[in-house]
Length: 236
Length: 237
Image (cartoon, rainbow over all chains, first blue to last red; front, top):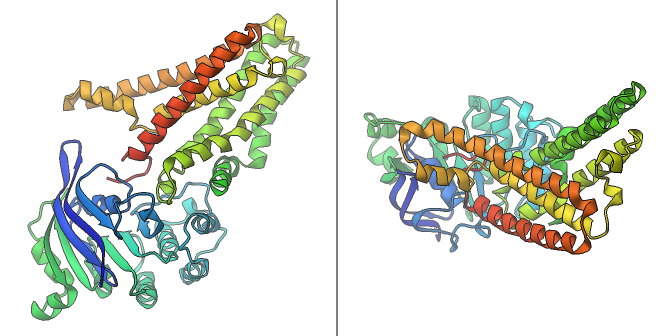
């Protein structure tokens, strides 16, 4: 398995505040990773850098053999943790937008995902409930046949039944030629999905495991391990 | 590029909509007719018409630039192209407002020379690009200093006044400066427009060249700033 994403001593500052503190990490193709840590640990910053949405940093980031930029955006699908669609857009406008600007967008797959999530094409995105917006964002992003998916809190605001449905869809449609990185602090939501986990705290990767190792060797669920690891953690 | 322009056109035609646009443009029309029947001072009305059309242009600018910044950062296209598409897509707004202004002038029976008011129809062939360039210049100033809050001004202020307790003051100063700069942009557009008729061809040509150079410079400055900016609207930390 090749490496799709690699960082070397990655440091990111917001003014004087150090958001990422020397992260050296690798993500292999064909796996679903959990990028786990409490609020303010640097998960969103890390994903934004890899998605080429943040530019200034120290160290090295290599995505699919390239520095993050215009070219990597063609094969990296990033899902932010908020609604990033303009207020006037309807679901069908979002579909058309992705169809127009991403060559890897599979419209049929995206439409099926939207139907599975009970979303209608004529609905105005800004008027959807928080949960429905989360479903819509996820369906559209998963509609891409990207090499790397960066999903930031993908299940925030999504009810348990729909979450199960989405996880089933994700597992059944996951291609071994792609990689998914799920950044979250809701471990129970994503537990079933994960092949590997990386724990982030205060801008540093403090631990990395195969999910099975935690389950078998430590006899714990990932969530139990996470709670033990971060029991005394300070959060923002 | 065509797809980008199409998307940008939707940016302000969709939210405003044809019915709203008709409504926006019909307000001054009705006001003009009523005021004309009431024998109201026509030069005041004409200034009000100009101000209203400026407002409509600003509205279109607002919709073009405010809402899609973060979404467009995801697509595999350089921000310079995105920015250029925004400018091109903005042309119809300019044409609509120009035609509307001319229509209102007609309704108002504006005697421009007596009123000291300009008319687009009286401009020479050289003066159109000058007007357009100065408009773009004003447009870019507004865009960069109101919408992109991570533009150069707040950064410079922060460097000069690096005291945490004064952060609110810094933000306050920034907003005042932003509004002033946008004002300068709009005033420069108005002044050039106002004096256009009395200028010689050489003066017009020189001002056109200067305005084009300034527009291109601001365009590149803005595009670079936006590309490097980490704080576009909606972007998370």
